[in-house]
Length: 142
Image 1 (cartoon, helix red, strand yellow):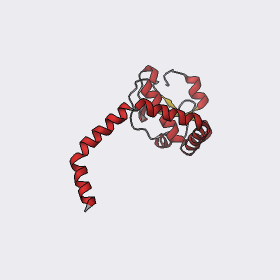
Image 2 (cartoon, rainbow, N blue to C red):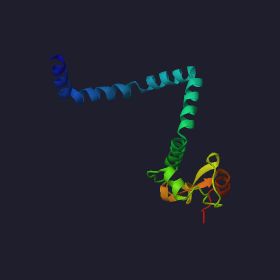
Image 3 (cartoon, helix red, strand yellow):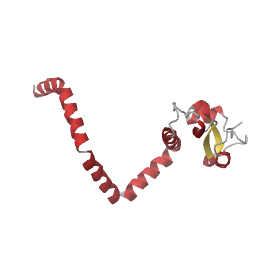
Image 4 (cartoon, rainbow, N blue to C red):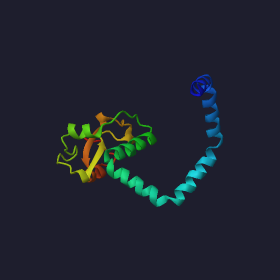
């Protein structure tokens, strides 16, 4: 009986509860960020170890996160990107020197650089060696 009463009251007041929660979080944002910062200072080694473990377990997701963030900073258009599909499409060959790319030397190159208005999308990405990609800089690949 109580659960039914609670559920009915909650349904009637759902918007009010949500608005109150949003206001509370907005008003206490500084306090929450200060608390998080203090926790991070105390647990920095733990946080970094956890982050490194996640990055090691999810190399493609980590590369995607960094690439997407870089594209957002450059105000480039972004699309859904499947790095494994790009590897398959390019047969694991470097788009710049046409030699096979080892997993430890893997990089994804923007054909039309973000700095020159290129999109961060599957059509504008190719597999590349880290060294080839670094040498290329912001030149447009042929």
